[in-house]
Image (cartoon, rainbow, N blue to C red; front, side, top):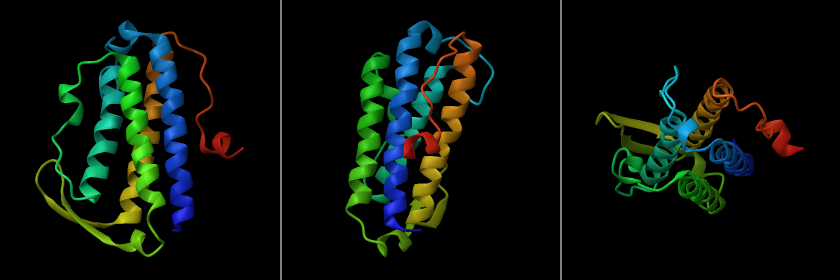
Length: 162
């Protein structure tokens, strides 16, 4: 996979994260903490999970220390959290912008959150990270609709490239 395409996905990820956080901030703190059935039982826990995963992966591939989950000590409101997620998304763009096509083939060795060793090509980690975020953004749309939020900016990749 080319670095140009991965950089486009990184930009798409930031764009879509901004759109979903706009919807969450507009819905408010009460909606964010309303329990419902999903992988994570609140909108807040789901968006925090997107951040936790995104942040953890960028730290892993750069061989930097991190705590799990990174959001555990966050005490701010949704607006502050939105900024944190977008900063993390921008960090991915910055990182990918400085790589060449050969860098994406590099095998990354890491331990998962259960302490199990793995080795994965960087390009596959990057694709996993952005696909993972897309998956959970879809859950967030469903959760927000259940809470009565029915208007969203488009978040599909095709809307981004248009």
